[in-house]
Amino acid sequence: MPPGATPASELSTRLSRRLANFKLSDAAVNALADRITVEGLSIARFDPCIYGICLDYYTDKLPALASLSKKKGVVKWEVFPYGIIEWDRFHVRMAFEVDELEGRGLNREFLG
Amino acid sequence: MSSWADRRAERDAARSGFLPDRIVHLHATRLCNLACRHCYSESDPGRHAALDPGSILAALRILRAEGYTAVSLSGGEPLVYGPVADVVDGAKALGYRVTMVTNGLLVSPRTDAVLARLDGLAVSFDGLAGTHDTVRGRAGAFARACDAVRRLAAGGRPVGAAISLARDAIPELPDLADHLVDLGATALQIRPIARAGRARALPGDTFYSASDETRLYLVVMALQEELRDVHVHGDLAPAHGLWEDRDAYGGLLGTCDTLPFATRPLADLVNPLVVTDAGTLKPIAYDFDARFDVATVDGLSADAIAEYKRQRLPRLQLLVARALASLRGRHGLVDWFDYVTRASERFTGQLARGA
Image 1: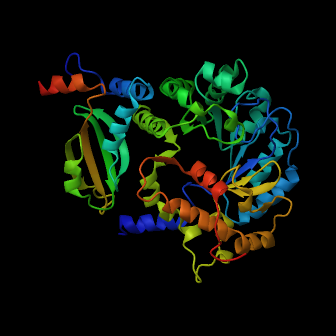
Image 2: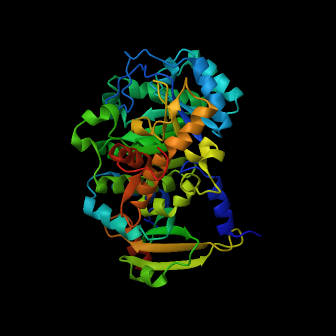
Image 3: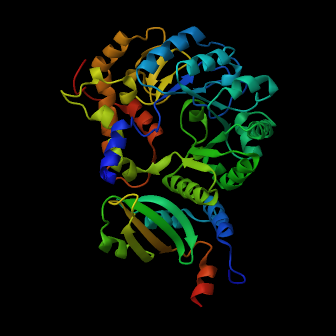
């Protein structure tokens, strides 16, 4: 881990506290929820990452990729088959840029 | 190899609503050693009426044959119900999985024997010490509830926490979750305070706006990531997700001439089933509207259940269908059981068939 970088678990702790604390405005919370809610996709995992927040979704239908691209704040997305366990299920991983939350400093360290 | 869709269909065929088990929520009494400000059943130390344990077990025998597999004891405070051990033993002898929600104040060596016979136990919390003691109306209630969690965990018993939060207690949730996990809790169930029972008299700002619900939902998601070894569950769910999962109610809604109610066990159709301290059997929640009552404990029989299916179940079917349909295309979050319970109060309409 680079010097000064924030451990993921500590970042996650701060995430739950920042979300719970009303100093993060309703508008910011609503904007975040709007970004991460994707029609037809069930959220499986929610994790701070170098982009801001990364989410893993599962679906049994190939998602509309064009709509994913247009989703506000999406930095990148990946869609791949879930694998041997579930041949006809898809795993979608999306990274969102979230300015309001801790992790922006981490972005700068990795992106230079 | 069957497809995921086939296995999902098989799973949905086995489901009865959004719960993983077919559950009887038993409120044997509203006697309680507390009088919490938000109590949905309005329990307090003055409510001495209680159900007869023999009647309870007779009803549970019939309900076991109707497909129910779990009994969850609440109240009131289950540990002040004198015959609680007899009910626990009798329910287990019938093949039920038996769990309990307690305020924790009476968890002690004196109650060890009955607690050891449970399959699961949750202690209820409303926030950190100051908030919890205020809501409970008892100084030291938080400390004693924490002692209960610690004691049960130290004894090797799996113990969870049932957390009900007012709006202004949301900021306390991460610290409360950390504290409970440090004490040994292995499961956290988190929900907004419901506008039911004694809670109806609380100030309006106790309850949640849509943004508050979103905030709580996201905090729960973050805690799920943060507390990997703990089962963290929130009662709020995206409305569109519930609509997409509507096949969970296929047992109740998917009826036709070849799949009549009469041949189906009650647990496939009504889940959870609530037994109140007055001996009434209700669908889904303690304060579900009385027009949807299923039966009474003393009047319960196969014939009574058959009559319910003929005469009144179609009303519940229509209510649940409408409630699910209202979620289609809806944004935001829903506490499904509270949502459909409030819908029961507003219900108007003709039955699809029947009386």
